[in-house]
Length: 192
Image 1 (cartoon, rainbow, N blue to C red):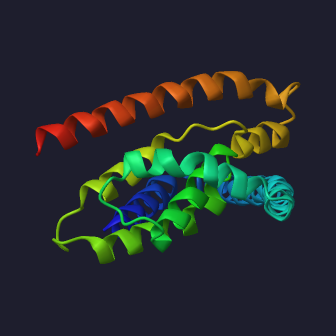
Image 2 (cartoon, rainbow, N blue to C red):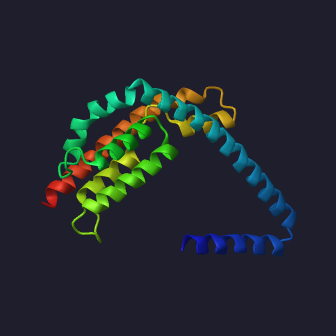
Image 3 (cartoon, one colour):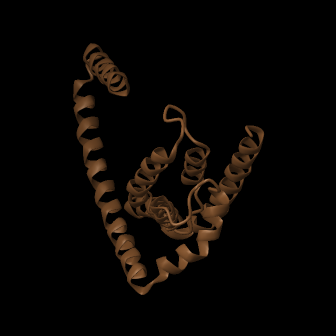
């Protein structure tokens, strides 16, 4: 459906530009947009590679294991219906850790894998389980210590201080996570 909406928008834009005699402007916008896309992608790749390398070092040093142990009781409080030591707990912890370090692109595959495992445990397959809703709420509102993607975009556009967003991002994501968890607990208790 989204592909059809995009196709209609593109065709409408091309048709409008042709009727107004602005095909040259359209061509310029297309090439500038492509150039900007490539520039931003390379900026994202560089910062993502750096933080993935840092995550690998943290994993080798045992920091991720330590964070996982620290968060494990919290995970069992958030997802009380999950069996202890089930593989999904590892995927959820990896996803949360990657989100905390602002690695949204790296966190996505782990989040998808966690959701697939949660679906296997879901008694009603056609409806999301409470654990799936909790994971989605946490994933979309996750506390972020280092907003890697935003820093990369700010660096690409030559921000004077690209990391000045860290403090406000931490406050905003903490508030959003608290709100998401409160709503999650409210709806879980209401639907019992």
